[in-house]
Length: 111
Length: 114
Image (cartoon, rainbow over all chains, first blue to last red; front, top):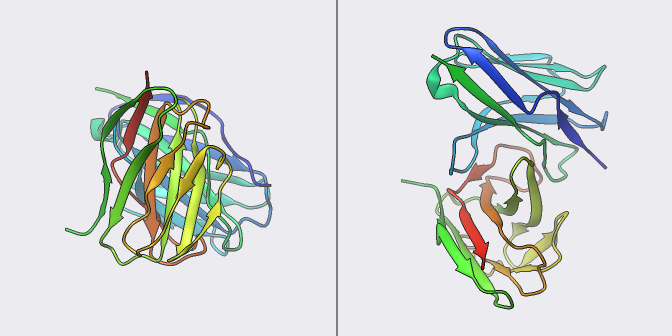
């Protein structure tokens, strides 16, 4: 089955710097990838998604990169702000099967 | 406003008691999901339902039960058979079944067993 993991459980960045959160998945047939942000005591919120027919997708201050060769996904946050402090999850699904979540990276922004 | 409502937000239970967590959505979404979240871990799928009157077990269904009698509602019962029920429970929905789009989450219910 699918497994999803993160390279770092915690990440600290200076305000204004760029943040990069990485995620690895195991199933080469995975075709849909999502990043969620979870603030303390709340449910996760959708940030951005990407399908396997794309390598890169950009949103407002966020970019998701997908490398299917090494089964790696990353989330880049530009000009990180204090409001970006949260836990970030990558989630992966395969051919309309259920979504599998990674363990999460806790991002702390240093003012 | 459209969204997902979970209740109660906090719940305390004595060992041996069953408890039911409520989840209601007014987004007209077909699919609904229950996840469990433990500290330092990702979300683990308990049960999901892609259509009314039908549901499937997720990865950690033992000790839990669900029903889907209405499109809007997907309650989760934590039974006394669940050995370690203290956790944060999240309900979610998606427009279509089949994990093809984003999940919309509720605010969660925190269950503590005393």
